[in-house]
Structures are given as C-alpha cells and as structure tokens.
Image (cartoon, helix red, strand yellow):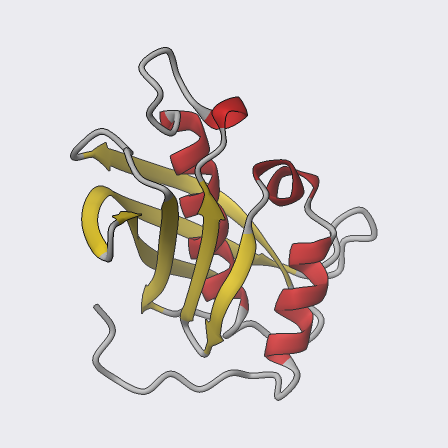
Length: 153
C-alpha cells in the first residue's frame, strides 16, 4: 500500500471525515463504524447481520462494495482541502472469497493523491475466531469537488 507519508491539507481532516460519515444513511443502515482515520487511510468495520446477506448467508457483494467504496472515499477525503467534498468516479471490485465472518473490516488506502483526482486501493477482510481472511479488493478513483452548493464534505 502507501509507502510515502501523506500530508493532509486540512488539520481538521479527522473531524471532517467523522462528521461526513455520520451523515451517511448507507453506513448507518449497514451498522458500520469508523475504526481508523489517518492521513490517506480509513478503516470501516461492521458486524455480520442477516439483513446484509445474500441467499447463502454471506455478506452480500453489494454491501462489501458499498463499505469499501466509503473506506476509499474517506481515505481520499483525509487529504483534500477543507472546502472540498469527495465523489467516486469509478471503481472495480474483485471478490476473492465468500464474505463469511462475524465481523468485517474494509480498508481504504490512498495510492496516488492529486489536486482533483485521487486513486485508492481497498481491501475487505472477514474476521472470525481471531482469524482474518481477505475477501475482496477494490481499485477506486475519486474526485475532489469544490464550489458546489449541492455537494458538501
């Protein structure tokens, strides 16, 4: 993942991420929480819940991709200016194994920050019995949006 130290453009980046996260109805629906917020790095965690599963009892791929997208988006957001908002413009997900676990961790990491476009990598882990298994990866491209009344951080 990221090897160089990433510097946020806003010293209040963590507070902005948390405020934005708590406004997301999707993350509340998933029962997700922020577990890590560092410059260029965000982890989101959620518990297994029957309402989030597909027909075999695995966490549904749509739920995995939703949480990974948010982890990547917020990782990018940590490096954006205070007046910017973030929007995903593209992502690709690789589902590597059934998302079977008691709890899940979605990691978003900035690979290449930019003034307008940021590229991130996401990884989803299923956690069970003190073991973790990589179940999905994501490549995600995001953009910083400024000067839009209808889009706020």
